[in-house]
Image (tube, helix red, strand yellow):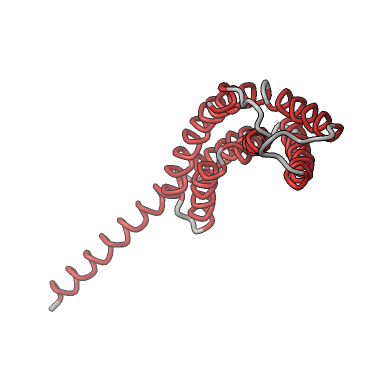
Length: 203
């Protein structure tokens, strides 16, 4: 009976020692985890502005990771917090490269579109002015079509103005989207007015 009690006591002491050892190891990770979270937070802050405009979905994944690291830290799971924070810091660094590549891609697209839309709008305006002064409209055109083209031209100009405003504020994704919409509208109007649509604009 006494031996059984001794064995139970020894077992309890063993369990307690293991628990204390695990706790000590976890506590040892507290300062490194705190530093890692701070570093990850800083790395993410540096890229958050542009990433939110250019790659919002990818940014959210990394932000969720940072939130997870902070939650683990608050629960006292410093080992998990440390591991997750290190992962987040690495992902934040990768975001910088992705942002740079996306920015270059959108800038190229903007350059291509912006080189043609204003000229197309000017050509449409000139055509509308000539037709408005004409006593007889060409075959395939009537007064209603001409008035519709005028209204669509106003929409086109507003779309291009919105695209230019977005570009000037650095919102490349919105700028390119609006610019492409303006280009599509320009092609639609030119086709309705029986105008030649530049091949380059259709690319």
